[in-house]
Amino acid sequence: MVDNTGPLKGLRILDMSRILAGPYATQLLGDMGADVIKVERPVVGDDTRAWGPPYVTTADGEATRESAYYMCTNRNKRSIAVDMADPEGAETLRRLAEKADVVIQNFKVDGLVKYGLDYEALKTRNPALVYCSISGFGQTGPNRDKPGYDLLAQGYGGMMSLTGEPDGEPVKVGVGIADIMCGMYASNAILAALRHRDATGEGQHIDIALVDTQIAWLANEGVNYLASGQAPKRRGNQHPNIVPYQVFECADGHVIVAAGNDGQFARFAALIGMPELAKDERFTLNTARLENREVLIALLSARLKQMEKGALVAAMEANNVPGGEINTVPEVFETDQVAAREMKISMPHPLAAKGHVDLIGNPVKFSATPVSYRQYPPICGEHTDEVLSEWLKEE
Image (cartoon, rainbow, N blue to C red):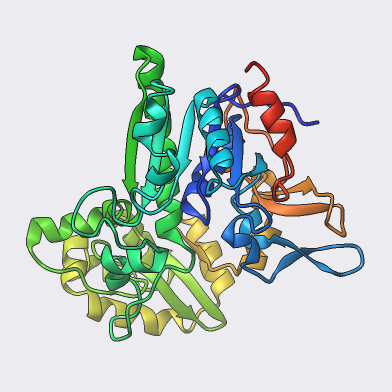
């Protein structure tokens, strides 16, 4: 048994969320030591259990119901199978909520009222409860009843209008980033609400929406528009405010050049054998390079196509110019940096042919209370009896 060394040890979370945003939030909190109880539908379980292949395979090559998608956000949790549509099951969940510090759910707005599992119902039984609701558009507003999916959030919230080549179609980010970022905002908000609860004894309801959080991380592009009134444009891999800051083609592949200031640009121009560019008034300052972006990029592109990417990256590193190669996902997990930072981990799993499953590690490194990997992504309902006995034993 791996020791729980996290700063949230002793915190109880009843997790009625599924798919990605909510489970990502609770996995982060579980990594930090919280006791996360994942509520699943009997037999069926979390929807993502069916989102494969790939699946964990047994020693005889048979696919299990444990999909890679499910496993990516559900470690450090215990699973209980409870049917909330059954009055007895709903009452069991209400009793568990009385013992919980946090409840998190991502059902449709007001979808849990009929089960007596909404915030207003549960706070009467547990006034100190922190209750987090995740939805597509939030608990208020004209779109509150619309469904929430990552792709729709990226489209509605403006991110897709910024992603892709200038003359191409709008493109979503390669992973479910609206869900992931919503989960991160949710975990942060839960911790803030817990601090308030610990100081005052008062719980509260957290209302968080995929679309709201996606709009929030428009960040510089969003404020560029608010400040100028000019709609941002898709620029492919180029940066709206820095030049050169993009991908370039070399003789044998592609590299990233990210010259974030005028000094870095001058060193970059010198190392590629074109020092005169840094002295050209069209390119000396970043503001001028922005105005003359197309001319400069054409000159740099022609030169870099004559260079090998390895030599270019080495020269940039030697001259303190930010840049690098573009790794494939397999290449990422083969790097010594991933090994050194423990960003690939293995956890024992009873169904896996290898006896373990490989997962992505937590990026947070605490000096005094490190994260711990205690529980593999659980099998549906694996801990029902254990949790009910443990949480409700005093009743």
